Amino acid sequence: MYVVSLTYKVPEEIVDFHLPAHVTWLQDFDQGIFLVAGRKIPRTGALLLSTADREALDASLAKDPFYINGVAEFDVEEFHASRVAPGYENLLDS
Image 1 (cartoon, one colour):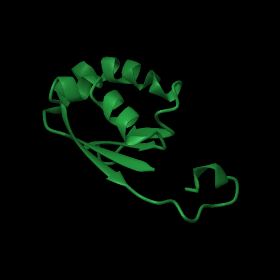
Image 2 (cartoon, helix red, strand yellow; image 1 turned 120 degrees about the vertical axis):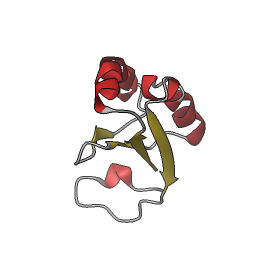
Image 3 (cartoon, helix red, strand yellow; image 1 turned 180 degrees about the vertical axis):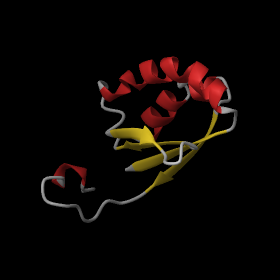
Image 4 (spheres, helix red, strand yellow; image 1 turned 45 degrees about the vertical axis):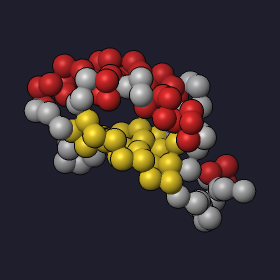
């Protein structure tokens, strides 16, 4: 499983300009790439959670308008989900 941390590199008005295209890009929820997406608080970036394989994840991230336009820096961290709360067993690594 992967946690992707986006950190904005540009002023908020530039983030806002590219935000509609970024939200459209998040259609990858429908393709099984992402499980969770949301803004950091305070609004310095965002976090994504993915169980896709690394190749598919990287291919998707390369299409993000925030990446293409240099809006955010992307940090991808892999981790092994060994314990989850009841009801989230589908997130466990086998």
